[in-house]
Image (cartoon, rainbow, N blue to C red; front, side):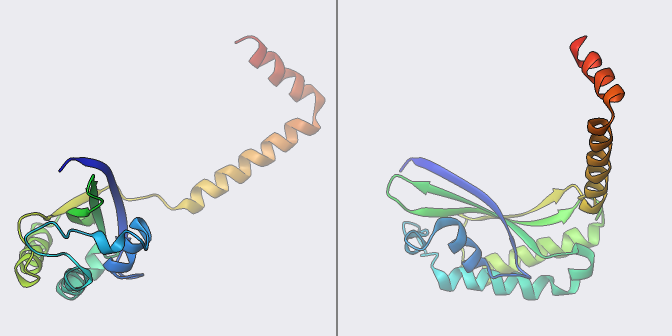
Length: 168
């Protein structure tokens, strides 16, 4: 069975459940073909078990994690079957607490055992960079736009800018 497509995406478990997030990625027609070649069938019941277990187990860490997001990696094979390869808890690199990491790992073990998943799905933690507030970028873009408007209205500035670019 050779792999011919791979998808990696993020699901916010506060906004949607894992099954609907996967459904949005693979489409209605392919949702029935998720992991039916494995020793256990990863159907909607198993996916919902993983979702509920993660949400319940990690709810006490919610303030430390900011949002409960998971990264899902799916692989599609020539048979048309989607196989869930990885489910990773996304944690900001700013969270550098061994107790939190230990708690997340315990939750992942609980999910793996409680939902009867085999070793075909890897559960882990993914560290991500914290994202700067987009408001900062919007302000800078507005400033740049104003600056360009000023140049457009001033013939001397326009000619200086043209000369500058012409020299390159």
